[in-house]
Length: 68
Image 1 (cartoon, rainbow, N blue to C red):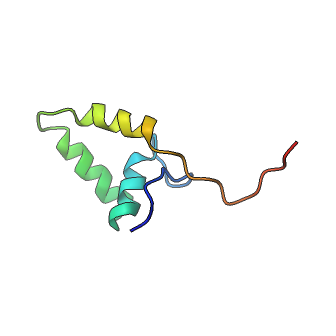
Image 2: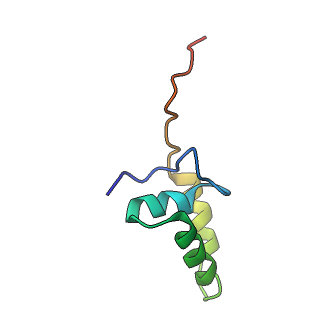
Image 3: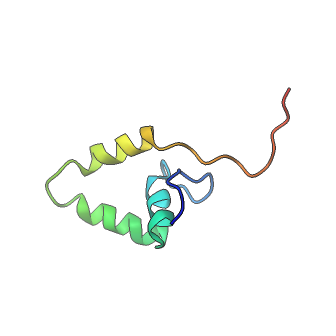
């Protein structure tokens, strides 16, 4: 399993579903569908998504940025 970080590519909104999909070895679309279906159930899913968006670090870019 890979480290949990929001990827720079493949994001729809915050990259949380893409990060979880990468972590658990599934497609991002599958993870998004699971999240949407879970929102039909009672619970704090949306708040959990927001918390993960804030707490998960963003993945570093693969290209080096100039240090100006």
